[in-house]
Amino acid sequence: MGKNILVTGGSRGIGAAVVRLLATRGDRVCLNYRSDQAAAQALADELNAAGADVFTVQADVAVEADVLRLFARLDERWSALDGLVNNAGILHTKSRLTGIDAERMAEVLATNVVGTLVCAREAVLRMSTARGGAGGGIVNVSSSAARLGGPNEYIDYAASKGAVDTLTIGLASEVADEGIRVNAVRPGLIYTDIHASGGEPGRVDRLKSVVPMQRGGSAEEVAEAIAWLLSDQSSYTTGTCLDVSGGR
Ligand code: NAP
Image (cartoon, rainbow, N blue to C red; front, side, top):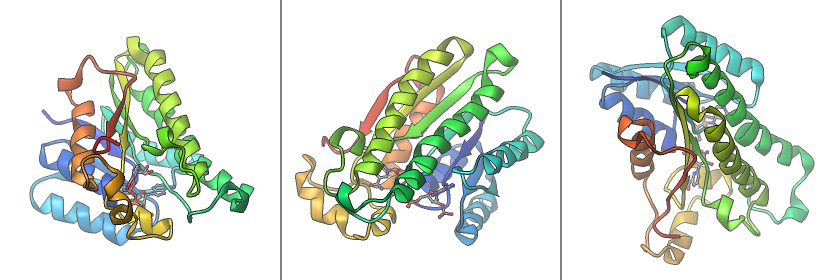
């Protein structure tokens, strides 16, 4: 029997691969996106035409009112929420710290950290067995940057992902006896549009020689790890950060 799962930032890249994998294995999926309505709807339409159950909701995870509206939509549609993939994340153009202003720092932290925390809070409120829920799973999408620090590129982004690792560990402990498992994946260099946002669409190919496996990864490879952490097959795994990074 499939689960009811919310994927934030599901219109492109890793999030879209997660939506596709979960939907095709029989889960019901809420595909959240921020701005690319056409891409989100096209993916949902394609999957629904093949028998899946996917619906889209626009919401900016950095805006608390948007997140509350998003979860209200879930409440209307589903009697229970079983899983959350906190995937939405942003980075800005490559820069040393001396070129990064506070506005950019705040924007990165608002999406990557506050957005993750607020979505996790709303999921816990619905899934916790201490609150009448049936339990569930949360997977946060961190980054290898949390370990590597992002020097000369985006330490603001790397720091935000360090926070994602830390909140994963803390929340996992906090809700472990309430039927909720909380884990993170740390993707390495993955072929998606996010590198163009950082001003370098070819970044993965430039850096792939530093990866022990000598290649970048695909969004589908990350999606497999996320799907496993959400599944009952990982039932004794919580509070862990799983590297999906070719050994780097
Ligand atoms: P991407 O291709 O740039 O896609 C980002 C997705 O997040 C889009 O669907 C976008 O929606 C959505 N999004 C962005 N800000 C949002 C917000 N405030 N509210 C709701 N949705 C928002 O990125 P990606 O590479 O797939 O990255 C996904 C996650 O993996 C991120 O957390 C990223 O930090 C992490 N990651 C990626 C890599 C990599 O190499 N690609 C490595 C490590 C970690 P719209 O299109 O509608 O704006």
